[in-house]
Length: 214
Ligand code: AP5
Ligand code: MG
Image 1 (cartoon, rainbow, N blue to C red):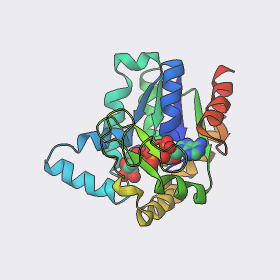
Image 2: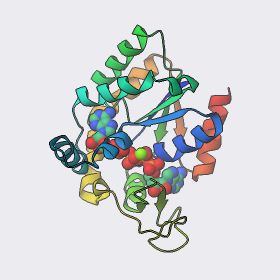
Image 3: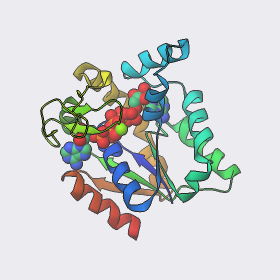
Image 4: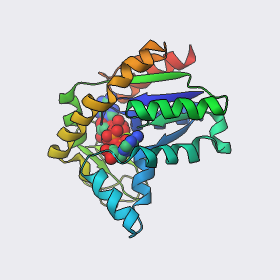
């Protein structure tokens, strides 16, 4: 099964992708995670794109399209995949359609994570990561056992540079201006499934499971 996870920053795409992956074996392809992983080196490429991502702007369409095209036709994705954070504008959506058409593939469904802007700000302000493993916490909703420490290794947790409040506001604006038009794009194709993300992650997951199992 091929699924697009569509929703504002901090709506829980990554949280749910991990649960879906565990239950169904679909691969999570997060363009944000792939970009952040590529910033470990000290190259000019790394510096240029890291400052874009840290500042909350979108990187170029060409770059993310290349990342997705390099990844979705790999052998492990034949078990199914979830696109987390891609497409993010109409051009990317149309490129994805062509890419898939050329390979006789299609997207089965688009899960829309519906969360208010106020909740986004709260979720991102409290989010913390264990950098090496990518394990994610929330100060209020999913706190670590020991304050500021990863549960498994005891190492310090960090905050993503783009989770600072001023940057969150500009990420939200980009979502409303550029990504939201995709809601109509996929609704018109009959592919959209709306998830009301009001409950805790387990409740949201059971809503998603009902949709996938249908
Ligand atoms: P990306 O990494 O994709 O960031 P994002 O879309 O802004 O989404 P997040 O990862 O911040 O949030 P999420 O929805 O995964 O929420 P999470 O599950 O962590 O992109 C980063 C950057 O990369 C972009 O700004 C851009 O620069 C670049 N980029 C990426 N793709 C691109 C593209 N296609 N084109 C151009 N540029 C691109 O949850 C958030 C918090 O809430 C967590 O703390 C979690 O514990 C908590 N939480 C989750 N669910 C619940 C719940 N139900 N109740 C309470 N708390 C919850
Ligand atoms: Mg994420």
